[in-house]
Image 1 (cartoon, rainbow, N blue to C red):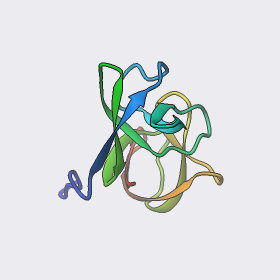
Image 2 (tube, one colour):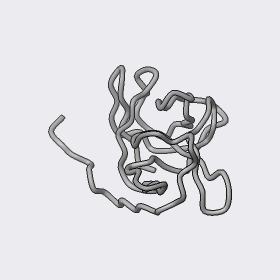
Image 3 (cartoon, rainbow, N blue to C red):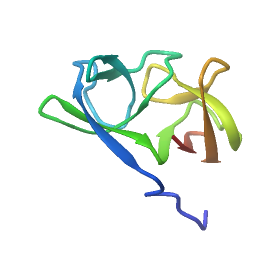
Image 4 (cartoon, helix red, strand yellow):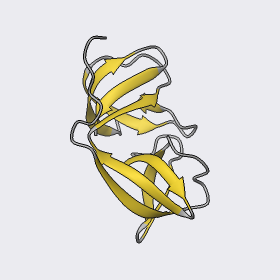
Length: 111
């Protein structure tokens, strides 16, 4: 691809990390006041954990994100959810997000 969406409109918030988050790069949900947890299957995610340190999670809540996907996802507005293993998937109960690029194993979208 000849274009790059990295850096577009990125915002990151610091939350307390639930013990379920063991590494960056996973979709997360707000689980309690000021706290996030790793998403389970079919959870709607608020963002992606982009950093984890000393019990805190840096969560990207807007901008371009590239994540592992369960399959190729068509571009355009799609309803996305977490699949419970760190990937994203299409699901009618998901959050509508703009998919801008996709392969069989990854998807790039705007939060």
